[in-house]
Image (cartoon, rainbow, N blue to C red; front, top):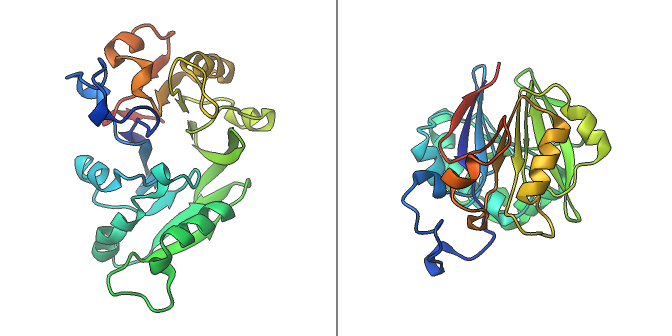
Length: 254
């Protein structure tokens, strides 16, 4: 399995256009972050988790020419806003795009993109097949996916486990029953927003402690705010086996 970090950033914090901090003015490409999203190449399948506002540019930057499914963690706009840009994949692949999410996520998408689901569709709108999921494992093209229920303050969010890889973003609490589904991981991706306390995201310290508790062989932090600090400085201070991810980073999992 090949994992590509399409985006490791967040809408949290001061917009870059009004900020002159060290991170926002950094020339290090690792400090330039699209909104959090990830691409999974699993056997011959090409999946994306979340389609934020940067989805189109992420696809172009990563040269992704095939997309077989989209999995949604939750319904917040910074994880869904780019869905309209699946149109080129509809056109090239001549088929509807399956999107997987819990009922409340799909309902929100149907509201935000009502024109896509209208009985009288405008020509050329995205072609979408909604697939409702719950906490039970499901399959895409014969490949097992395990939903990982976590909490984003009071909002239920799904992470996903595929094989020995797990992806969790937008969380500040992981229930014990979910932790039991995270045993034996080779790679964990976990959100680490900033160093100071936040109502709905793990801080850096909290993410480190959670990573140690889960015990994956390698952990990468994502959904990073500019308030966390410079990549070059923060990454070298992390415990062994724990790293800051960056946009464009590719890793492989057996």
